[in-house]
Image 1 (tube, rainbow, N blue to C red):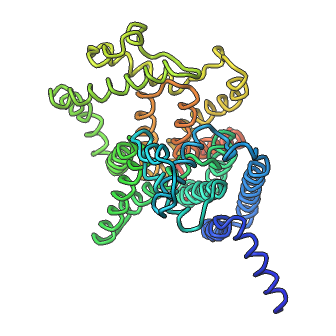
Image 2 (cartoon, helix red, strand yellow):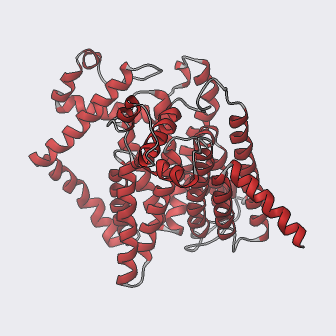
Image 3 (cartoon, rainbow, N blue to C red):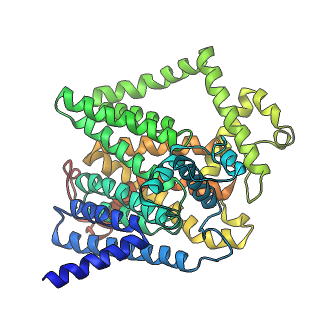
Length: 452
C-alpha cells in the first residue's frame, strides 16, 4: 500500500510539474460531475457518464495535440488569432507584478485600453500563483465552461426532465464551434461560467422563501452582473435584461389576471417610455453607437454582412445623425442577420462552407426551442422566462453591433447555454407526439419540476 501511495504521489507530482492547472482543475470538474449526477436514474446516469467522459477526453486530447504541435519558432501555438492577445498580455501583466524585467514596448502594450478586461488580470493572477501556463489556460477554460454547463444541467434536469437536460448537455459540449472556443484561451468560457452562475442566483432568489436568503441570492446576481460587464462590454446589460425580464414575466404570466393586464398595458407603457425625449435619445444613442461598431466590423478584414444602407458605410460619422426611420430599419435588418447569417446561398470561403452543417444545426436548435417553450413554461415558468430573457438580452446586444460573420458566430454561441435546454424540451415534445397513438388523448402538461 505504501509503495502504491508513493507511486501515485510521484505521478501526481510529475503531472503537476508539467501542468499545475490540470491537477487543480481536474478534481473540480470531477466533483461537479458527481454533484450533477447525484440523483439521476440509472439510465440517465449511464448517458450522463458517457457524455461527460467523451467530452473530457476529447478536450484533453485536443489540448495535448495543440501543445505537441507547437512550433519552436513561435512563442505559443493557438487555436484562434485572438488567443495570442490574451496569452501575451496576461504574461506581461504577470511579469510586471512580479518585478520581472520586460521591454518598455511590452509595458505599454500590457496596459493599453484596447481589449482590457478583468479576464486579462485574472489570467495574470493565476499565472503568478502557478507559474507560466500558456497551455494550462486551455485546461482552465475547459473547466470553467464545463462547470457552467453542469450548473444549468442541474436546473434544466430538475425542471424539464432528463431528455431535455441530456440533449442540451450534448449540444453544448459537442457543437463544433462551442467545442473549439470552450478549450481556447479567449474569454468566452469564463463568461459562460459567470453567466450560468448569475442565472442560477436569479432563480434561487425567485424561489427563496425568506427575505434573508433572497437578499443573499440577489447579491450574487449583482456580483455576477458586475463580473459580466468586466469581462465583456454589454455583459451587465444582458444580466439586467435577463433578470428583470425573466423575474417579471416569470411571475406575471402564470397568473391569468396579471398575464392579461401585462398583455393589455405593457405595450402602451413601452411606447410611452420610448416617446419620452430623455429615454428616446438614450435608446437612439445606444443604437447609433452599435451601428457605428457594425460599420467598423464590415470595413475590417474578414467576411461581413450589411445591415445599413451603403451611404453610411462611406460616411461613418453620419451614423450618429441617422433619423429614426433608418435606425428602426437597421435594427430589423440586424435582427434578421443575427438569425440567418451566414446565409447558405452566400458562402464566400471554404471555412464558411465547412461551417454550413453547424449553421443548419443552429436553425434546428431555434426551431426546437420555439417548439419547447410552451411545455417548458408549463413545467417551470420562472426558469423558462429567465432563459428566454437572458437569450433575448444576449442576442439584442450582439445583433446591433456585429458585422463580422466570424465574430457573430462566436458571440451567438453565448446564448446557446440558454436555448439548448428549451430545444431539448422541444425535441422531447415532438418525439412524444410522434410515438403517442392518435387515439390517445393527453390531458394537461407534466407537473412542475417533472422528470421525463
